[in-house]
Amino acid sequence: KPITLGIHWSKIRNRAALPDVRLHDLRHSFASVAIRDNISLMVIGKLLGHALAETTTRYAHLSDEIVADAAERVSGSIARLIGVGQ
Image (cartoon, rainbow, N blue to C red; front, top):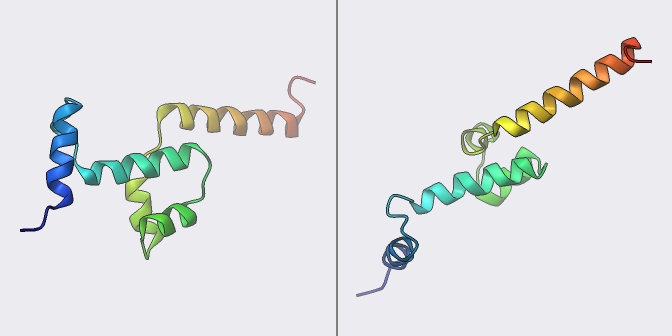
């Protein structure tokens, strides 16, 4: 009988005291870290084997920190464009 990846993953989860973490969860984590590191959705999708960008967007979760940073950058750009703070 062949040994499956699931058996190994179960042992790893138990040793790490993470009984509810699925292998599939790691794909979401991978995509979210890649987004944080400014890797494009197209590249992330290719790495995950997705044919459609829409699929990748379901995997890549944006943290509050990423959203706040983006808001700061955009508001700073707008302020510079209209001459606020000069």
